[in-house]
Length: 416
Image (cartoon, rainbow, N blue to C red; front, side, top):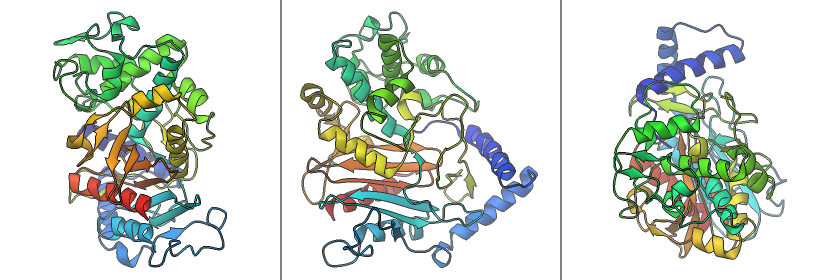
């Protein structure tokens, strides 16, 4: 997810910095001193090769002792380790972490970089991160489960469930279907482009109202364009149909159903990350300092981007989804019915109902999503034969080259 203005994030950085200072037993410092310290930290990042250990594999409880943690089952160096080292040493990420389920069915986890630039603490193995728009796939699964139960119809219009709510210039909920919401073909404007600098708790209705003050991008069904607003509306439909909060439905229908022990939807006002996690950083400009933005109110993401998870949990989720453990065959087939989405997700990418397919360099397709949230960027993918990989870095990527580098790291892990 992307969308809060730089001014808004600057304010959030100040708030997060004060919280981190209190947690570490220090008195908050003046803004000028804080910025000076942040700049010094950024200079340290430029010379991380001397400070950061190479990527390390996990403890033996997740890697068979009969296999070397320094190499893949085939001969040669571990290409996943090399990818993570490149993200840190060449792309300048503070940290990178990965979880990979290989062809042999075993899971390997990796880390590279530093988990906290202030203390030089190591990166927690399989640490929690904000997974941003990977949340969309969770939301889509809940909607499609309700379709399978006969409680939602994919080709029904939005007004069937939210009468009169979705109206604006060129926008009419009577002309937008549930399918178009999930497949990003509704034409709804993207609310995250217009949030402004007011960093606070947002209700879903406020997020939708922000979008509806702007005109439609195109008539429903005429084009494809990524808009977080689609998933806010989808989440509101889930709440209307079930009479329960979206967070409760995601927890009951997805998280607990497939045993995701480190995944959760933060409660209102919860700006923290519960379990061990690397700190997330924000860079205002390409050559600006990295500033800690770990603690941030995530409510502006809601159904489109609020979840927190780990790489291994994301692998379990996408693996369970492709294996048919979350959706009946008819609804899984609908989810995998795709349209071109190369403009956002790269060459050959296609978008289904909250699910992205991408061609792999070794042949076949990966199915997954990606997530962007201040402080973190994630990419996840799984294949039909049980392979899965998730890679995260601890700063939001703001250029296509960096995002493609991260995607190649996932491809490398899936093809190893």
